[in-house]
Image 1 (cartoon, rainbow, N blue to C red):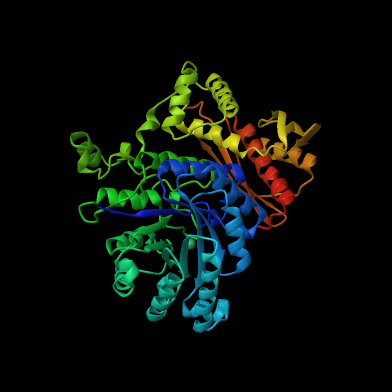
Image 2 (cartoon, rainbow, N blue to C red):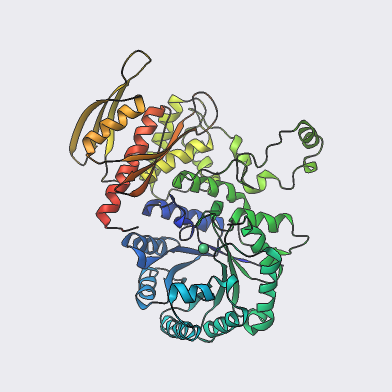
Length: 510
Ligand SMILES: [Zn+2]
């Protein structure tokens, strides 16, 4: 059975999803989860674009050792240098370099002739090859590139040392049969694809809902690598979702006889972790990982499933790690049970201090709430990772509210050694607590999105608040969880404000 290499771009293309930007700790946590999941390559970021991006790629290259660590670069020396410097700690580093090759991109975006584009590719490849052994070249907008020119571009990149060529359907325009045909023509016309000395990769976007279909069609026609992201996050409508692609291969091996290194039982936990860390909530009907993906509502279906599962189920949810959903921890589970459940979710604390803190949070929660579910554990973990050390911390809050009084909130915040107190009234308790925080920080914020949801089941469930603030025209997402939704709201609000401070301190322009 042929092996398909998985090139994960959750931290690069995925992070470009509106509202998905992550801080360094979150990225590291995702990178470690991707390593456990078994991806072959992690594209860790676009190092030249900001100091935050550079530092994240560097830390991942330092701490994640199994997969290749790739940095993205345009065909520009300073980009290639930044990719080189940031991936230095990794023994398996890779450069991902790209240049647009479709007529429309060359004419309007690059303002270059096809000959100039070929020359730029040559020069950049020659320069890159002095620094990197493993280089992936992407002709951007590949699926809309004139075919003969595409072949010329691919051959040029290979001649100068590209070890993989990635054909992106950058704008999500291709149809599965058309894209598959493109791949088989390229294999026919490029000897290094035929003898498999160079990887042939695809990168599909989901603008027409065809990202997974196009990736599957590509591998059925001989592509040897697929670029994808967890939950399909990415520019606009997103990328091929790893979980969809892997489970398609798994479920239909009768027709597409290929496999990957992905540990399928970690697909669901990894998806959950990403959801908690980015705050990007999945559609309930999302294939494989959505809330409803294995729920049978119609009586006829339920009856069928009870009689024989496979009447309506093409996959067993336990294959993707979904059965652990039902496992519940409680006050008496103790440290051992807690640790075991974390391991099941693919969470490993290397640092004892962090583990102790997480256990402490768990015990506090188990005191407030009888049953602690996986989602609760992930919420605790996300809260810990989200915390920006030098930001505001809420020491105390008190809210009075009801239908006959004006909602009033008092808060005490701490930042470093400074302590601040404030009280405000508002339209409701959440508004009142946000106003008292504003009074202390002095920042003008616009609340653009505010979502409260129960993290797990039961009336005593933790509430998780995800919100989005506009501060000086830029978007900052915040997350917070607590059994008290007012407290969760305040935590989420502070989380977004702390991100604003963090980003401004770092001088990140993103
Ligand atoms: Zn993309």
